[in-house]
Length: 183
Image (cartoon, rainbow, N blue to C red):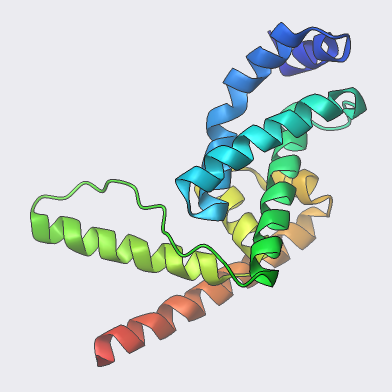
């Protein structure tokens, strides 16, 4: 069944339809939350909160965009809000979300993990919206149009923000690499 049909059923009180939406979208929402928060436990908690909020607000969904876009917007905004709370409390998460890398030798594996850790540290050092746009485009693979809908801005603005975020990320990684090779 299509998302729009499931949403209509949800708006009429069908909780089983929302359950189907949950199972259909939970992995991508969790993946986005994990990359934004850099912590599995926080991502799990936020994923639950995102779906609770989606359920509470499903009647407000107006079909002007795809349900998945509406859900991503909700997820990104909730992650940004949580990151801002932590930043103001000065408790920004430092744990990295590191996936298993294919490696031929233990040395290759260690180098791969270290490189991935450096990239995630650099991504985590970006501002929340910069981090979100990099994650949505370069990691989650959303189209420019989908990202424009998530952020409610023009395609040109998405491309501009993405370019700026990538430039900052490149500068951070170059600086970190220089520091690493000097020590």
